[in-house]
Image 1 (cartoon, rainbow, N blue to C red):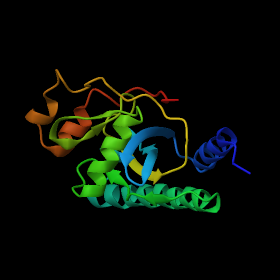
Image 2 (image 1 turned 90 degrees about the vertical axis):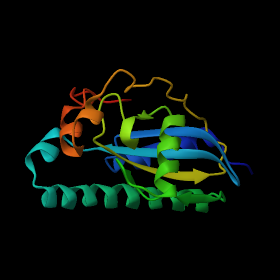
Image 3 (image 1 turned 180 degrees about the horizontal axis):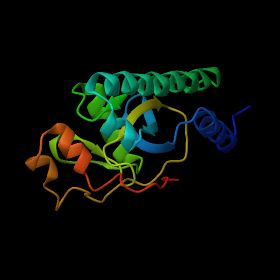
Image 4 (image 1 turned 90 degrees about the horizontal axis):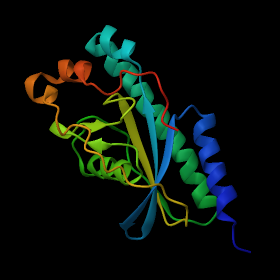
Length: 181
C-alpha cells in the first residue's frame, strides 16, 4: 500500500511547527538520489543580537543550531520509518563556510525562503540575516514551494560599508515583527 503523501507532508510540517520551528518549506532539487529538500528556518530576535556579548550571542546561537538540528533528525527518522531515503545537512548561520552550508543556502532559495546576498549572507525578507537554516534531503515525493526570485540586496551597500556585526544590525530586512507563513 502506497503512502498518501499529503497527510505525511502535513505530519512533517506539524512536527517542525510543534517544536517551535518558524519556517518550513520544500524545494525541488536534483541531488541524486534526492529530489526534494525540506528546509527548516529559525530566526532569533534583535535583542539577542544587539545586547549580548559575542560570547553570550555565540552560546545562544549554538542552542538554536542544536535545536533545529535535533528537530531535523526527528524528521529524518520519520522519512526512514516510511521507507524514504533522507540526509540531514548541518545547520547554517550566515557565513558558515563549508559545502553543506552552501547547499543549505541554495535549498532555502529554491524553497522560497530568501536569497544569498552580499558577502554570502542568507537574507530572509522578514528576519533579515537573523536566521538559522537546516535542510533534510529526501526522495519522498513531496509538494514543493516556489523559488525565491527577488534579489533583496541588489540596491543595498550596507554589507560593503560596515563590519560584520554592524552590517547585520543595519540590515533593512528583519526589522518588522511578522511571520513568513
